[in-house]
Image (tube, helix red, strand yellow):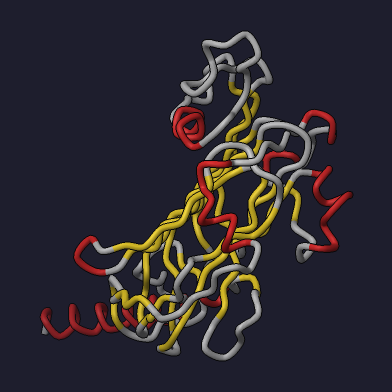
Length: 259
C-alpha cells in the first residue's frame, strides 16, 4: 500500500532532484585502519499476521498491519512464540538487496534485481505482506573521500551511520511511501576505517523492498555496497592458517617452559 508522506517535504524535493549535496559532512570512523574482505552483515526478519495492530493506527478499525517506524520497533521486539508472528529469520547476508516476490516480478529489473527476502523461501507470493527487517554491522571505507548512501524503500526505513564518540548521521522516511531511493542531502566526508550502521525497513501491503547503495569517490552513480566492504563485527574472524600458527606457537612455548 502506498500513501504520500507529506511530512517529509525536504526528502521529496531531494528525490525530485530539486536539491543536491553541496558539501561533505565529516564523520570519523569508529575504528581507523584498512579493513578488507568483508564477511557480510547481520540481519533479522519478522513477518506478522495481517490483523496485527501496532502503536500508530492500531486503535482504528482499519489500522491493522505495519504503518511506520514505531510499528517496526514493536514488531522487531516480538518473540517467536507471539501468536501474531508468522515467521522470523536471523542470518548473515552478503549484501542488502532484498524484496518480496511481487516486487521482483513487477519492478525487480529496474532496481538491480533484488533477492527474495530470506523468510519467504517457502511462502506464496500472495502471503508476503507485513514484514520488517533490520540490518546491522560495519561498513569499511578504504579510500578516503566524499560518499553518499541511498536506501531503496517500499514502504519506509531508517538508516544510521555511526562514527567515533557517539557521532552519527541518519536519514529516514516514515509512513507508507511509493518505492524510490533516498540518500543524504549532503555527502559525507569519510576516512579509512570501519563505520557502524543500522538499517531498519518495513513493508505493509502489496510489494516491498530494501536495498543499501552508495556513491563513492571513484563512482558517483549508485551501486550496491559490496560484501567486501561489509563486516558483521569490527574484529575479523581469524583464518584457519592463523589459528594453526597460533596453536603451533603455543605448543612451542609450552615445550620451552617444560625444558
